[in-house]
Structure formats: C-alpha cells, structure tokens
Image: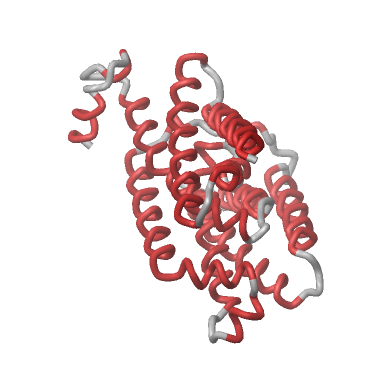
Length: 282
C-alpha cells in the first residue's frame, strides 16, 4: 500500500497530500478494482438478457447478511457470499428445468429473497435501521483487506474470461448450438452466475443495493451504442465503467453525495451521449 500512497500523492488534490486522508486513497484504489469487474461482467449480463439478475443477487446477498447477523457472525459478508452462490446455483437449476422465461424466474427468486431478508432482519421486532447502510453503500469505508479480496476476484474473473469467454457467449446466445458442440451449457452459465454473485455480494456494502444493478448494465449498454465489434464492445464497457467509477467517487467526495448514485448518474450520462452519437452516425 505504501507504493500506492506514494503514487496517489502525485495527484493535484488536497486529499492526495502525504500523511492523511487514507480513506479516500483506499476508496480510489477500490474503485479502480471494482470498476473493471463491473465493466467485464456487464457485457455478458447484457448479452445474456439477465439485466435484473444482479438485482436478484443483491436481494439474496442482503438475506445472507441478515442470516449472518442473526447468527452473530463478526463479518456477515461471508455468509452473504455463500448464500448468494447457493442462490445463483438454484436459479440456474430452476431456469434449466422450468418452462419459464428468465425474467419470470428472476422475478420469483428476487421477490422471495427480499421478503426472506426483511422477515429475518425484523424477526423478534428488531429494527431494520442497521441494514440501511447496505441500501446506499459507503465506498469511503472500504478496508485494505477487502481491496485485496477484490483484486483476487478481479484476477479470477479475468482468467474466466480468457479461458471460457467464447463458450460463455455461445451458451448465452444459442444454448442448443453450444450443447451440440459439446459445451456444458449448464455449468458455463452456473460459473458465470456464481461470478456475478460473488462480485455483487462483496461490493454491495460499498456500492449500495439500490444502484448495484445499474453498474452491471449501463457500461455494456453504452458500449453497444458505439462498438463495431466484440473487441470494441468489451474495451468501451471497461473504459466507461472505470470513467464512471472515478468521476463518481470524485463527485461524491466534493459534493457529499452517495458514491454509488454518483457513479450510476455518470454512467447514465455516458449512455445518453453514446445513444445520441449512434443516432448521428446513422
């Protein structure tokens, strides 16, 4: 971290000065790790037409947090991660076996998860207020150990993309064709769902449950407006996600607003600009 702090001190901001404001320096590093995660996953979320899947996972993670708190765990995040992974596995199984559209299955799981989370968190007439922070998030509270965890997750997602992207893409676009070519569609989709579950759960505390879904949709949605091929699609999604993350963090610091909401608004603005550019190019 000393190397990171030394690099940040080169920036022309008062919070970058040596010897203080470490929470902001840690938040900037967290954003530089989280943003690429959302940028990479966003492309497959959009192509798989699972835009609301991350929202359902957020609800399941909230339920996991409530269960962890009920059990008295020091860090209920790990319970939330486990619950979200189990949630994603069950979703993949039901989606494969049920003769229902994906959005219907997502709706069933999402409503069930949020109801269960609220039921558990308010059980015994307990107050819900201690969970309010999960709804908005606070990137400035990120810990160094959690940044390291995010870096490991980023590396795992990159490796997943390197070795399985073509299979994932074919499985999402044409499952029958993928199956005919010997691709294990169920396990490909399950691996992707589990990756999204882990990213959403770990970052929910800092991004906020209310806006986390938009971070998995807007980068790729904006990238589709201006991309001419798959390589540009991924590159633009990554660039837009990083830009929105940095700009949103800076804005939230100087105006005192939610970082997650600020990032989302920047990404929405990027989508609007790219949409208009697409219209002009036509």
